[in-house]
Every structure is written in structure tokens, then in C-alpha cells.
Image (cartoon, rainbow, N blue to C red; front, side, top):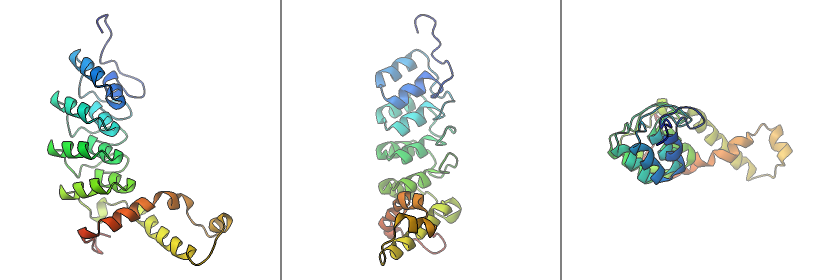
Length: 205
């Protein structure tokens, strides 16, 4: 960088050097890049910006550093939409709290999962789901992954059927059991059971 290298050069998977360092976690490199003039809110790359990359990577110290340098806590973009959704997907409770304390909206829409609550629910991160709900995350049907809920209920039915008979893999495929759902959807069941204290109503479910 002392030899004419552009600290904000764009391109590649991570978009820029700051985002790459923020995701991978060497705090000293992030500090160096910022000291040399890296744009803390530069957009691009798979995670959209450095804050989202650090949030997904679980690097709380880097998140604090970026926020201290003026990172936009509500910036949109990238695969996961925003930093809160990224931290929720990665199960990084400390970072979720930090972002919420900085004023990010628990109901911000966008990204692969639609919002932070869906991301945390999909992965079965109960503590983060509770935290988001306590901060006003909207749990109504227009914000809930209906397909995920459908497969969760489908899985319950399948498990009940399997309890009374021994199906082979071929028989399961013949009965059109969604084996992908059987692998992924237990996360939803665990979350719903653990959140019984939130009194899910028929309107919400």
C-alpha cells in the first residue's frame, strides 16, 4: 500500500480486501486496511460489505471495530442481505446483540432467508430466535417461511408413520417422502417446541 496499491480495489469473491479480511478474521489486517483508507462501507462481493462478512464470520471484535469506524449497521446487499441476518444465520449471539443495540431493525427484509428471524429459525438457533422476538421481530405468517413450516409438519407425519412400520429407503422413495426435508427440517421442530412460552396462535402458525 506504500507502493501505490489501491486499498479499495474491487473484484473477486469478497469484493475488496477489507471484506476478505473481515470475514477471515485477522483483526490486525482490518485495522491496517482502515488506517490506509479502506472504505468501511464499500459494497460488493458475496457478503455485500465488510460488516456483513465479519458478522457472518463471528468476529465480534472486528464488528466493533467496523462500527467504530462508521460502518452502516443497516447496509443492504450480499447473499444474506444485511449484517443482522448474517449473524443470526451463523448463530453469533454476541454479534446479534451488538447489532441490535446499535439500532438495526429486527424486521429488515432481504437476503437469502428474507429476514433474521427466518435465518435463525431455519438453523435452529433458539437463543437468537428468542432475542429477536424480544426485540420485536414479527412472527406473523407473512414473515414466516411457509414452505419450511409445511415440511416440518410433513416430517412429523412421516415420523409417526415410521414408528409403526419399518420402511426401506426404496419404500420411502416410493411413498414420495421428501428425504431432503427429513435431513434439514428437525431444526424447525426443535425451535417450535422450545418456544412454547411464546404462545403461538393458530393465526401465526
